[in-house]
Length: 409
Image (cartoon, rainbow, N blue to C red; front, side, top):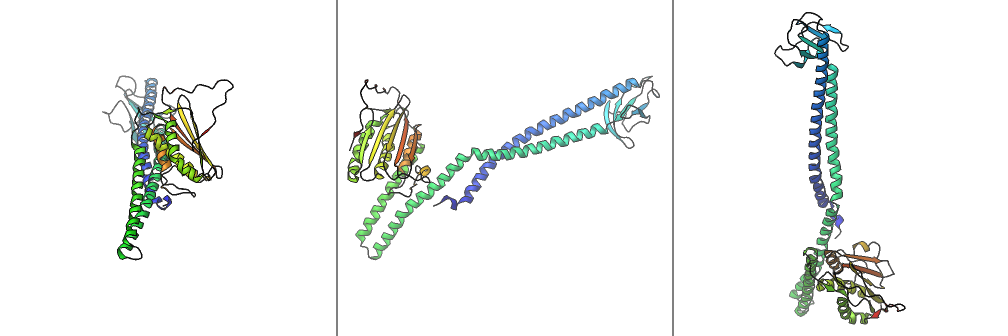
C-alpha cells in the first residue's frame, strides 16, 4: 500500500512535533529578549535622569544670584531663563522629578535646600529626552517581538531538520505496517476462500481445502517467525563477548546451498583466509550471510557464479558476495534493505532477508552496502568489527602467487 495515500495524519504528527519543539524555543528566546530589553530600558532611563540631574545641578550653581533667593527658575534648551513662575510640582516630592506643566509641558525639576542665596527649584524642558526614551522603548519592544517570531520560525525549521530522521522512521514504520498487513491479508483471504468452498462443496473436496489452509497457515507461521527475527535484530541489545569465525560460517552456508546451486547451474567460489573472527554471535553471522548468499544464488542465471571474498585488517572484516544476476534498478536499489520491499524481479519470499541482515549488521556496529546496476550483477558488502587478537595472515613468500579462488560447489 503506497504511503502517499495517508499523508494527512503523518503531516499532522510532523507539524505537531515541530511546534512542540519550536514553541518552547520561541518562549525561551522571547523571555531572554524581554529581560534584556527591560534591562536596556532601565539603563537608558537611568542615564537620561542622571544627565538631566547633572545639568540641573550645573544650572543651579550658575544661577545662585539670579532672581529672588528661594525662587523658581525655569530655563529653556539653551539654558536661557524662561520663567520664574513655580512649575506644577509638589513641595514634598523627590529631589529630582519629571513633571508635566500645563503651560510649559514636560519639565525636569531639581529641588534645592532653601538658603539665603540661590533658587529653591530649577527646571528645564524634558520633552526631547522623553521622546528619545519612548523611541528606545518602541525599538526594544519591536526587536523583542521580531526576535521572538524569528526564533519561533527558526525553531520550526530547525525542528524540521532535527526531526527528519524521526519523520523518515515514522514513514518507514507506516509503510512497514501496510506491507505486513498486505502479506497477512493474502494468506488469510486464501484460507477463507478455501474454507467456504470446502464447506459448501463447491468444486473443492474437504481434503483439498484442508491442504490449502495448512499451506497458508504454515506461510503465516514463517512470516511471524521472520517478523520476530526482525524485531529482535532491531531492538535486542547485542552480547559484548560473542565471537564468530565468518569463514567457518560461510563454509557451512555454502555447503547448505550447494545442492540448490548445482540444480540451478550456479558455481560457488570462496576466496578467504583460514579464519576471520568478528564480534558477533555465530547465529547472527549465519543469519546475515545466509540471507546475502541465498539471494545471490537465487538471482544468478544458469552458468553464472557466486563469488564470496573475505578480507580482514586489524579493525574490521569485510565480506563481499558477488553474483552475475540481472542486477538491481536505480529506483529499487535504495529500498532493497527495507522490510517487505520486493522489486520488479522478486522471486517469492517476503522481502525480509536483507532487512534482517542489515539490522543485525548495524546492531554490531557494522555496515551493509549494495552495489549493482542492471545487467551487471550485484555485490553485497558486509563489514563487521574484527575481534581483537585475531592474527593477521602472514604475507606470502617472495615470488609466490596468491592462492586462487577455491570452488566450493
